[in-house]
Length: 233
Image (cartoon, rainbow, N blue to C red; front, side, top):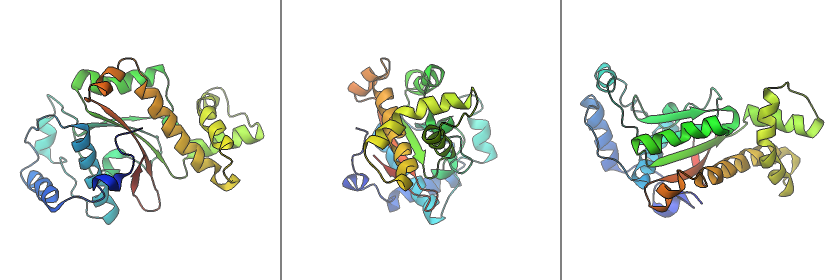
């Protein structure tokens, strides 16, 4: 289970007027103020507020000025980490309306996880105290489409892409076992891949103690290409 079971239960479906005012003021000032470390919940609120702006077309493009570039040239304090797909339509910094130094971002095809990638996921929480890791799948994921076609029809994608197919097979099997209609198989596989990746990270022997201590949360998410909205599970 991630930080949120239902986002609306915490009243996080839209940014508050105060939050928007703070963000606007920070942007006007060049975004140079250093923040105390956020909690996972506060970090999630910040991501949700940014996504709300993205959906409405009211982005403020924070922390993208020359002053911010110089400010973070010698240090960084990302408030969250997003592990998502390589798809060109889902850049986390845009989807969440963030800027330089705000996010650690890790991207692989269909957010597939191996030992090398897991080490990258560990980096933010262990080395910088980043309190939130978001695993984000998305609508019409090309990697999942290719993997499902390969698994359904025995199509060989070559030695390296076949590794992605193998990594997605547990999610595919879970989706098939849930008896979803064929036209929803790709979407169900994407959602299962996100869920299984969250579970794997929560079981990471170096991250689990941080989660138990309340210093880290791993949160699943799904991005709609049609609406731009990120939903949480």
